[in-house]
Length: 251
Ligand SMILES: Nc1ncnc2c1ncn2[C@@H]1O[C@H](COP(=O)(O)OP(=O)(O)OP(=O)(O)O)[C@@H](O)[C@H]1O
Ligand SMILES: [Mg+2]
Image 1: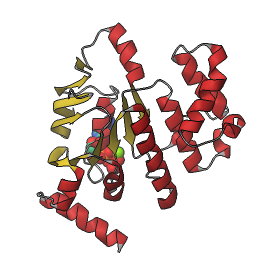
Image 2: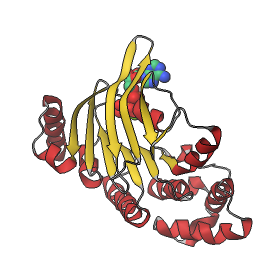
Image 3: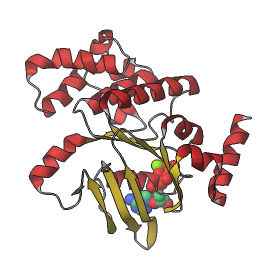
Image 4: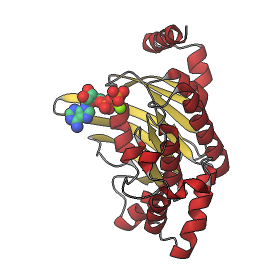
């Protein structure tokens, strides 16, 4: 199957420091790539490159076979809808001065959805993220962290993207809420067939959500493959360490 997203030799330097070093990855439609590694390993830098917020110094990233960094303006305009970000803090995605309904309508409008469809489409989006239409009139600050994150996910899927980039999207949530939001991600993925680039420092989270795994250490891939095989028999000492740290936390 053709990958939705493919990176080859992706490299990013900040001054003399190499934050992302010759990284390869691919995500097929409807699958989730978990990107793990300790703080500073280059996860967010790679995510920002995938979101086209940073330009790599070497290597290429393709979305549905189109090079992200050399596509025409018109292709880029289309592609913009195809990839969406779910950030760690939903307050970064939602406008605090707008109600939930207005936030979703704003996004639908940006996608060219006619005004008379905004209300029904917003209600659909809320339902897809397991919130009721009652939340339409609430402001972001009136929501719990889990609810706000659900709205941010609803906003991200408004354009029916092919790819969601999630950067620590559940890390700020309590464990029980985290599990619920992860289930919402999994349900949406089944429904929409969206591919996910799922960044987290938490191996318990990737175990729950990721089909495949990319383990970074100081910007380099130290391990990759199907999640269950990587976690069952980590080949790299760094991954073994990560796993050991996780079992201590769970003890
Ligand atoms: N704009 C920048 N300028 C200089 N250095 C940067 C910049 N952005 C990131 N870095 C450095 O690149 C390295 C990787 O950072 P990055 O944010 O990608 O790590 P991360 O894996 O997301 O970490 P965390 O788990 O803490 O979010 C770090 O050493 C960071 O200080
Ligand atoms: Mg980060």
